[in-house]
Length: 295
Image 1 (cartoon, helix red, strand yellow):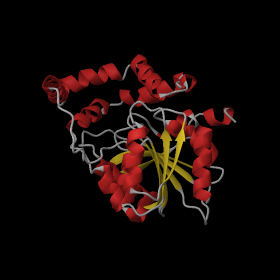
Image 2: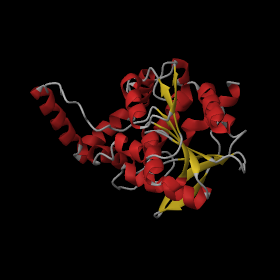
Image 3: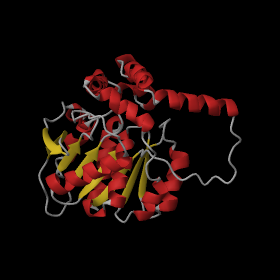
């Protein structure tokens, strides 16, 4: 089983969107009774990150995976990147290329973008699967902790510094090093054997593309998108939440109850994995997605 889930990524093709080349992969056959599935990667990742999922899920579903603008093999123009931009890209892709509503499956930033589509472009979403979804909730803390003024100043200086193109470029040159990519992955994966040279290379390679530093820099300048609670209140399609419960970035213990509070009809499962459960425990994730969709 494991051998079939570590295959090389499938060859893909390109779609033109707003004058930019967008890379995507398609596998499996269309089923009259089952909606197609669209897989959306997280920050710094690409369609390659779903290879273990596509290998299995294509047996039962028509599976699509896309590189959102600015990442993977897609174009990296010097635009302002935001959830709204990726929402519109994904909605147009579903409308123009897939041709019918899809189940959106998103990890981290891809989860946030998928939620934006499902909430704000509901005609594109047959269902939604979120794996360690990124994004902010509205801060409703009535007893805020006292702010350390020194930390606040340092934070503001860091943020204003990294909006300078020279500083974000230097930071980008540091974080794109293979040794740093490996170190970051080892912090957010529980199973260290899943942090392979292939995975590191798949994240490193797109960082060499012209335009990659500008995409990275735009993250520090982009205004925050719509809050998760607002999006969840707008949501009407079925929602499956899969949590890598040991993710140091997205604390499932504190975040999961907020998702339940704003969308109580969701289905959820907790897995012994970190930030990318689809890559770390693919068989479990594939089984849960398959059984949820077929039910």
